[in-house]
Amino acid sequence: MEHKHHKLIIKYQSEEEAASIVCAIIAAKIKNALDKETLLKISAQKKEHAEIWKRYSGKNIPANRFRIMWHIILNYITGYTFLIKFFNKSRYADYEILAQDIPELAEIIENEKMHERALAEMLDEERLKYTGAVVLGLNDALIEFTGILAGLTFALANTKVISLTGIITGTAATLSMAGSEYLAERAEANPKALQASIYTGFAYLITVALLLLPYILFPKHMYVAAFVIMMTTAILIIFFFTYYISIAKTLSFKKQFSEMACISIGVAIAAFIIGIAAKKLLGIDI
Image 1: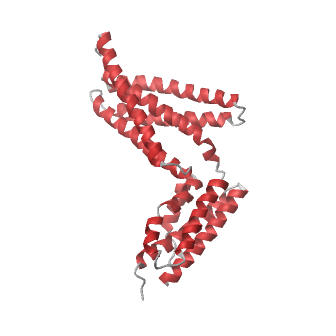
Image 2: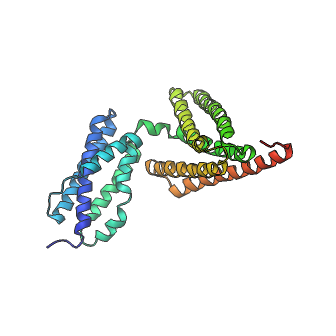
Image 3: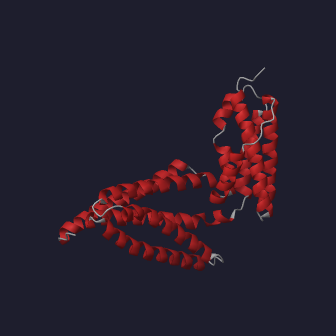
């Protein structure tokens, strides 16, 4: 007789098979011995979970090849710490539905929680060492540059002039930010000060480029539309980055997002008012 939650069971069996394969593939390619061992253990546990689901489905469910390929691609973009935690994040609600009918589910849930704890304590992914540098670059670019562009938008009222000013200002600010981070890390005797400064500068530069893009693309009279898209882009950058950090670093997404969004919007509003006031007080009409 088919289990009443057959579709969910099939779904999780396939997902656990895929997760087991993905963890094994990632483990085979990384050099850190401790991370490799941790990922292989997680891979083995995922396989055990798939076998538990199999007892209830009664079928051999192959792992979804597209899911495996997508997760491997995602690993290159986000890193394996984010990816493994992402595997475990959103299942507990559905697990509660199944818990009364599948006794082994308590073991699966506990194992998945153990995964997260083990990852938080044991994984030592290189890119996460520079999260602070990336946060610094993003925060400064979002707060400073949204403010600069908001002030310039209504003071200059010309997307092309704003673009030119923004490119010059953004390039100078990027170099200044990277240099300041390098000097700060050197003062702390960090042997990887150069890498930290590169991460900071790169994060700043990418953010500046994305914020400037609507001004570069739009005709000179569409400065209001460019401003709206610029602010929307800033909110989206904050959303995706804080989501990534909240999972990879096990932090509160709502708190991180609301803080960054409120500060960026507040600075933009203040700069907008100052830009309008300065234009009127100085009697400048461009």
